[in-house]
Length: 169
Image 1 (cartoon, one colour):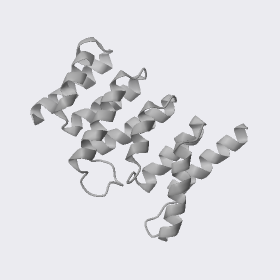
Image 2 (cartoon, one colour):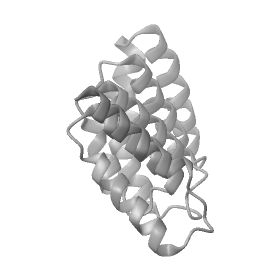
Image 3 (cartoon, helix red, strand yellow):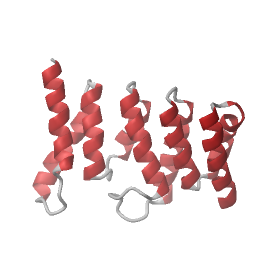
């Protein structure tokens, strides 16, 4: 029922919000297990809570799940994933453990490229911004159509992303 869904969302989100690096490893592992289960929940609201919690817990070891959620049927989930992927691509994600390996950065950029065709403008915008900051020059070809025939925001954001990528090339 709706109360159960809302409660599950809040409990899972709270596991991330209450996270502290000083917690005992067993408690951290237990929290992560519940959050990971929430990422696969049948209810979009619960998946939203799980993504919010994961942002606090750290993506380490969950990149496959994060990338898979870029294709989630819920625009709310995809929006949060687009934000998270943008942060990972730009190096702004505060829970990242140092520099991401090149293979991981490439996987993040490829996931962002998949979001360029999303129906939601806000998701496409996060994808373009992340790609522009990623240094992943293979995204140039995927960004060009948006600069030519997208919405006005698509044209502006893709032009900025293209300029950054071409300068990095």
